Image 1 (cartoon, rainbow, N blue to C red):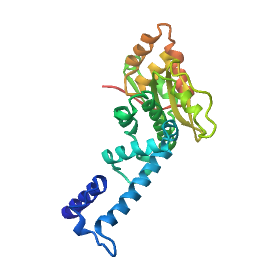
Image 2 (image 1 turned 60 degrees about the vertical axis):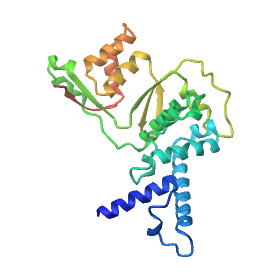
Image 3 (image 1 turned 120 degrees about the vertical axis):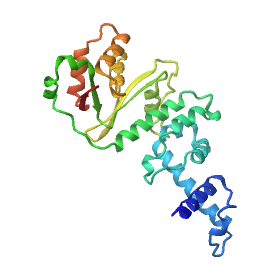
Length: 258
């Protein structure tokens, strides 16, 4: 088993690096040299993974054109080969890769567009979950309420960007019919992405509302989340903010933090 694992590791490295030295003798030529056969397989792997990234990040691809996207994807694939068999799970780190990719340095908004697209992909494929009965909260002792922590619907993501990435995304839904250029100097976006009734939806949130939800989504206590919201808006109505979360059936469980 150890020998097989070592061979698999060497084969993966050969695919990514192009150096077949360590695995050439293990490859049956059958009319082709081992190097040529490996090139065919490498081409298939990179083509398939690039297509998978393009399917997850279509707007990101349109913003830079397909040739540049393939160039960036090639670098990403070499640095981040798949860790699992499901292609829709591949590419989670692509936005962070773009943020560090020198060729994207003049498109600082691009990683956040990609983060929005990944959130939408994650929402589409997230497992189903059901909201808890709000009556359960009535049984929580008042002294424990500040230490409440909530679990959100798995499809939910909260994003913050200094750029209007939601407008960029909407303006580039059709490669042949791009709308008027988006003013990147306009206000940024505080977004919530989730799956609702089978569809992936996103909406803008007010700063205090986003602060409350983001803190809770990240596992913070109700007390800490309330402070975060009030820091953004001293007039924020916490009771109304919590009621909205319950009405939207976005919370699926809760517990009292130790």
